[in-house]
Image 1 (cartoon, protein in one colour):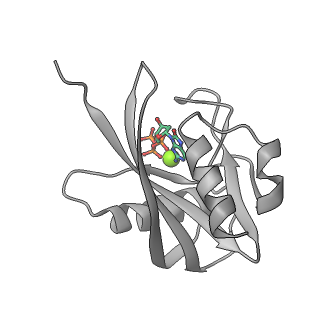
Image 2: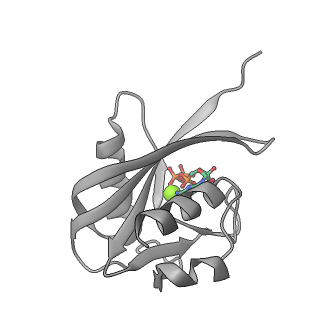
Length: 132
Ligand SMILES: Nc1nc2c([nH]c(=O)n2[C@H]2C[C@H](O)[C@@H](COP(=O)(O)OP(=O)(O)OP(=O)(O)O)O2)c(=O)[nH]1
Ligand SMILES: [Mg+2]
């Protein structure tokens, strides 16, 4: 049987060499780890629309435009995900953890101090290349 893949829109929120990251709630998949805000793409929804909806819900930002960075498929064993990762550098609002989660702006050269889910290793590498 082929495994169901969960399609996720992920936003790398960028401003002045810093990224806005959040801590995943302990009770969620990959809980307690840092993440780039985002969430599941709903049936019939575009990745960009999902990104706009999720970033408004999670960090209270209005996304005006984004740039695709990469697509990653990762099998966690208990769950298979496809992360559609976009750089979000065109937005309005003040980012904060709008669902009560911890959120912070982090300089790109300090990203290594934060523990992300395994699928994110490639994302962090690509970001470092892109913004060096
Ligand atoms: N948002 C986000 N999800 C990530 C990242 N890396 C990674 O492996 N994931 C995985 C963890 C989850 O299995 C999935 C995202 O699901 P989610 O919990 O954010 O979905 P959601 O916001 O729609 O929330 P819900 O339906 O669970 O309430 O993708 C990341 O950097 N950001
Ligand atoms: Mg989410």
